Image (tube, rainbow, N blue to C red; front, side, top):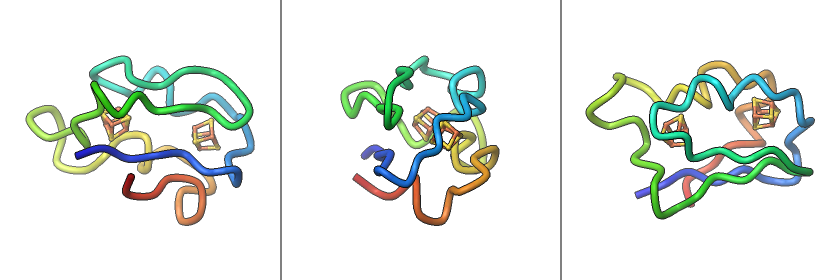
Length: 63
Ligand code: SF4
Ligand code: SF4
């Protein structure tokens, strides 16, 4: 259960501070660690990285 960031990521950096499990690493594209991403279950009602991402529809998908 994890999300992944695609090549559509524009490297804005908005998602990093929102992740409750510190699963996102800076890069081009940014990277979500599938071992620690819990899709925000137990922390928030919706995935916070998707909530803040300006291009979430194409940049953050189900892994
Ligand atoms: S879905 Fe939640 S836990 Fe997973 S990377 Fe995004 S903010 Fe972090
Ligand atoms: S918020 Fe979206 S565009 Fe910005 S770094 Fe994260 S995944 Fe990339």
